[in-house]
Length: 410
Ligand SMILES: [Zn+2]
Image (cartoon, rainbow, N blue to C red):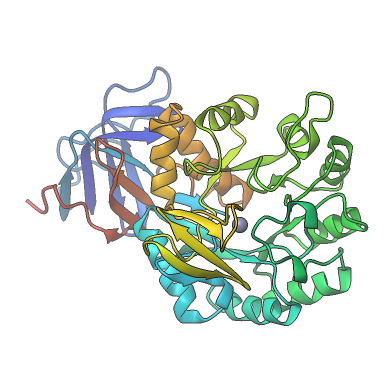
């Protein structure tokens, strides 16, 4: 048993301050602490003086094996990042198992306990090879599936996507990619204005995957048609999209307008103004999913990196297409984005927790097991210090990063 106590624990009902989280095995076994929110306190959610069973009675045989006094710190749910290309010098785009595992490990230490692996546009045979290889690793280290960001994207808004490999929607190629993944291709981003996009979106949804819209010059009406066909995610809202105009709100305006759409946001201080981050949270309450869109350069310093077929230069933590001004992904961890959203965009920590964990967990149909700190769910937890730096990460009840400044045992 592991007991985390004294911290501000962010639950779906609000902040328990000071609160506790009790972990047994891979699961959260108890959550609570004063003051309890009115009317939301089941009998077992009280701070145990000793060890208590769920009915509140003392169990003499149960020993506290590990205690962490986390006064002044925060405990939040493990973060769920549905758009990330790599980190720690390694890229998912190679498809090599050692690269995939290294990128997952880097981001786990930064707070991500559930992740997609995103692949940028590349030659079809390279994508097929990477999908088949990464599919073998789904289930390891919180890897939940593959996100294909391309190749069915718009040239006009391709950003760092290699223009030479962009394709018109092609159902036969989509089917080959889905088949190569044996069910692990979980999300595909498509530009709605391309010929055949609506048919492709229906095909993606029928296959059980999430259809996302982005890297697109779509008008409001074109985006609406894609959402009507089943698209439920806007890929990094505002970035790689037609800018909004008050008479033509475009794809971003459509995404904000529809309650079924989850809006990805890159809160890295480079891709979006903090006021734009705040605006999206206000316009799409409960529907924002924070993503890193991180590339291999995250955690690897400045230099030159590969993003699929393109070369990216990183200067001062900012990733650009080599020799151009085009922003090419981020160099942040999920923990960095979380801290930025609270500190710089001045959002409520409960809203940011929902965007970093709850909403994306629901989107991938994992809400019963992940996304909030609740009894019975997977013990995926992040400990933040008073400055919101990640100082502890637990995945499935095991420490990935053990909080240093806390007591152990008794
Ligand atoms: Zn991306």
